[in-house]
Length: 410
Image 1 (cartoon, rainbow, N blue to C red):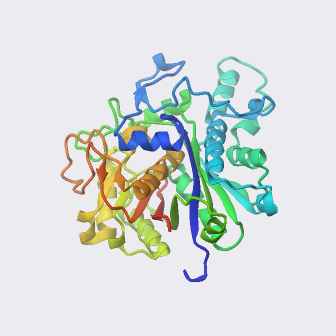
Image 2 (cartoon, helix red, strand yellow):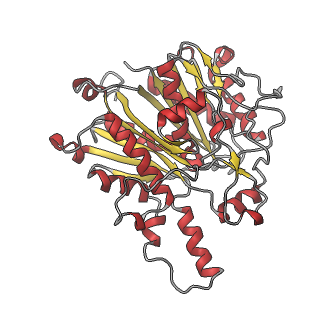
Image 3 (cartoon, rainbow, N blue to C red):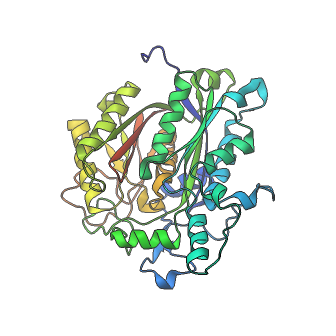
């Protein structure tokens, strides 16, 4: 399908829940202020862990608000986060799913790296450590990977294509691209999409500790003294629809989702490839009909690990050539941590905010530049500048890459 034939896709609602609390605008304000959300770890078994920091939802945030008592027992924390973000995004969009059969043609695609991990962790502990002979009767419906998507579908009566996407840290971007493609080709008229992760369980923390990629102080993307990533949790949900539909109903358009690119490194399960990442960025540009010179800002994957940051820098140079030196590049993981499959969702809030407000959020904690990371990473302070178009990068273990391209609202 040529670009002239396909429907343009726009974003008319966004919601977020995470270490900032509730609200996409709250998250965006904290990112542009350079406000860190990484804090001392709160966990019942923290005395058994080496991990001391994480980016967690504050204890005073009620994730059960708005959920009826019959549904609550069916939900893992990952689904609660998803419903909180979806409620905000759908409300902002102003869509009426009951009108004109829209609910029958609205898709739900939610990405997650590990799904209902807290339920899996808790019920496994009951079996192995407490010698229980039975698990909670709702264990399966809480932990299945498609639970967040299904719960959104049920809560709002959405009967279009509904499924989960699992590609580790690229899950959100893969999900959003799938949702956009369905609107483009006419399979759906609207979509609720994004990503969610609740991965601060004892077993997950021990597994990440074993990989020796967790930082013990903070997240310092692109800094020579970076010590690794900091785990986080959260969800971001977005409402997509065709430009034609949004304009016809007078909706406020937050940004245009102009294109997406996906690739696989096909080389190593954990070591990233600059060529693979660059391939996804080039595909995103081609899909959006954008030239490299049209991009003003790249929201980097930027994990703060030695391998990722150097490889991503090389990938940006491979993609943009001389224009790489004119790009603003930043990693907001320095503030909201790495929420694995949900990171792309929190970062999409940052990308939309940068386009809408003409403000690039900073990379915090970049206090010792790495000579191998030689781009403009917008250190310490947000920058006001014209932002015409943005790429948002997500690169996953397994060598899976997904990149979103966004333009300012038409």
